[in-house]
Image (cartoon, rainbow, N blue to C red; front, side, top):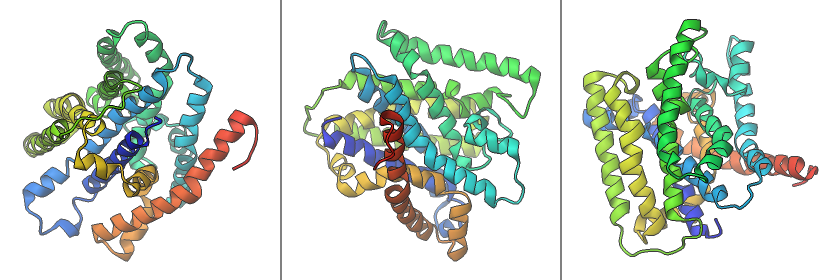
Amino acid sequence: MNDNNYLGVLTGVRAIAAYLVFFCHYVSFETFSLYPQWIKMCMAEMHIGVTIFFVLSGFLITFRYYGENKINWKKFFVNRFARIYPVYFLITTLTFLCISKFDLWIYILNVTFLRGYFSDHVLSGIGQGWTLTVEETFYFLTPFIFFVVKRNKFTLIIFPILFLIIGFCLVFFCKMVDFDGLMNSNEFMLHASFFGRSFEFFIGILLALLFGINTKKKYSGSLFTYLGIVIILLHIATLAIIKNNYGNLQESHLGILLNNFSLPLFGISSFFWGILTERSFIAKVLANKLFELLGKSSYFFYLIHAGIFAGMISKISSNVFFIFFVVNLFSVLGYLIIEDPLRQIIKRFILNGKITY
């Protein structure tokens, strides 16, 4: 990651992915009442930002750590903890303190990320935070995945199939227990668990391995960049048509196939390959300082863009673009004042035993 241009491009992608999810959640707001129905239908499928996040996670973790001769796993997990947990814990706790009925069990499920395995509670607390359970599962499995893949690259194909089988088996046994919706359906497993979404991470892993840890060569043109964008847009349009005819994503096997498998394999991978290897206008935009800052604050943005904070903003004005601007403003401030300082302090304290910044 010595080449800041690569880091900047991928950081900019994080911002775009978070913004896609934002507009997916706000498509029903009055602001879009005058928009044609087909545009609103496509905007409702902007949840593909989550798929982009998962592919990006697989790529970045592999790009940063896989090539090391001896991976410092303590540092790896400290970095992941410091990056994800402090802000999540603070905003989750604040959310539960503000709701009228505090449920200790649901709160515990939220602060431990376990709520992502329970369909009855998956959207509790910070609703969009269910994706973090998927991410954390991947992080915990990363040492095992790297250990096996380094010995046999063919397992990159075997692993997603294996995790999918494990997911179906978990659903089979958990249905017998029937406890708070614990992995209680194949649709839930495919939509909201790592076992159903692992293919997206492995596409990222494969891309990182193909790209090469020390690759710095850039090509003129922008074929893969724009090809990826076109394929992504076609998937959005197709998902909108499927939803209109067959129901929500998790209710449609074809929708899940497109979102979890086809989109990352053909669309997102092409786009990523393009912005990493081509000298395109889009790559330059995503790598500029503004998008780098927005990308760095995108995690804070993702956590607060829907929930009690966004709800308070909507009382001032229900205009989506006003909410979008204010949430972005607070996210940048939250990143600079809270998130990044906390991350640095925790990393230094755990790794060096010093509380300094």
